[in-house]
Image (tube, rainbow, N blue to C red; front, side, top):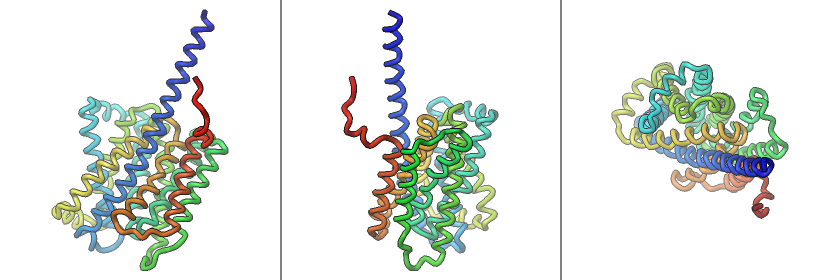
Length: 331
């Protein structure tokens, strides 16, 4: 009798585990889609004056990054207030995991997101898939610091994702004198996002991921606007952007998409692990390029098409065995 009960309990546990993993995979995939949307929207905001005519190449990206992250944080603040979690924000900041999340927020927000937007400004849509190598760095850092040893299949999928990014960037565009600098900025973003993913996976397993994401976005936005924007001489541009109106409208919407993306990404990392969560998130490289082609006039080239397909194939390989598609479900 006890053996029968144990068997039933084991079956229920397997079902719960399967459902838990399925949720993690879905949230990871959606985080990629929403980040692709964010990327497109923030580029649209940059087409409006005074951002479009800003001097230098640092002020406009960091003004956009700061406002976007601030709006994302405010959207998440509304969400957490509705869910009754506001008091949890203060409590989380006083814990060691909460402080680890702040470190991740600094790396992934002011440093990585700022570098990503500089990369977009200098290299255009070509910067998107380069930054997607964050999954590779995330898997490496998770292996080193969290002892999440990737399987051979996961490693193969990561390599394929990177190969897709290389294919997309094989042909350099004309009329982009700072293209290489843009690519290097995107690579810096990838490294810092890899570290953030590792830290969020550690902290996210101990604190509420919704609260952690809210802290991440508010902290990033405030650091950008209060510290970095003045350092790069962007205060005048910040004031002009806020007075202009239309850029703010687009950044409010992009903030909503970015907030949703990070919310889903943190949940995925805490559910299925850093390597798989980040591998699903990097599909934003496909969505970002696709939306730029559809809505921003990015030229369709063989390298973009082939590279995007390769990235998706790599992400699928990381998250599941493709042979599972052909297996019948056991009852």
